[in-house]
Image (cartoon, helix red, strand yellow):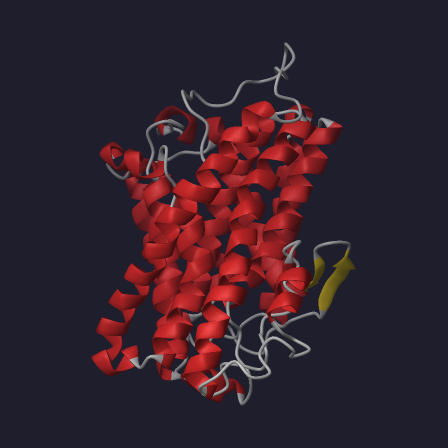
Length: 396
């Protein structure tokens, strides 16, 4: 009999931390083409427009998030769960917004215009940027009309986003809210089949779109927007479906870990299916589930000595939210003259320069309040299935 995910997984000794850091690096690397050189993201042409390296990294992020967030929800009360999510997302975001608006943006204004004339009074200025985006809905990406004369700005023929990576936060919050509803109603513990049915429903909708597409290699068509939802705002229907599907796959994998086989041979088969569908078509029907299996496999099968990268320190969120503004600044300073490799290396190093203090000065201290906030004395009731063996909660 093949070993199961539950048998091979340890919440204390796994490689999800390093895998998430690699995925954050994947996003930064993917952004290097458009931000530094005004070119399309890598993988787009090779996959016939189905996906690219940046999107693959996002799918991995949301899969792992679904797995870890569900584990957190299984051992938490609703108040505990919501408090932990607030602490994990908002303090780091708020500081990033302030640093971007009052650090990056004035420097960019001076580099572009030689002065700060009109910068503070602009109707879409730094103060508006912070206030508008304070609750992570990200309704304003530009600041004072800047970043028009960058490679990406010239692609857009207008002002560019200062931190385009933050567009995914509304999807994070939406899916966190979904798990919160399942925690609050008791469905997550008493009826895990609900999560599985939601994942199957998303997959069937993806299959419908794949079948309706004009060719086997075409990206599934968009279907407008979902919302607007209070606080979160409106979301693109296609991204909601795709990211929601992989998030729910991660959640279902956590809930049914005792039934999911995790074996080297199955991982090889998943890798072959992923490559074939990425190259020849049918990625969203076959390749995306295969990619999800590969991410779970790597998170558990990679050497356990890598576990220290995700225990006690988590630079992933900081690297993700600061990578984009760092790359925009590097583009203005002409770092692309060092070539693609040089620009990528500087981008990764620059993101890390901000990610490390973000964790140690903001995110980490905020997470220490988890045990002091709402529901701190909560303990799961008897009869509830415990989470997988763990000596330490993940940093999510």
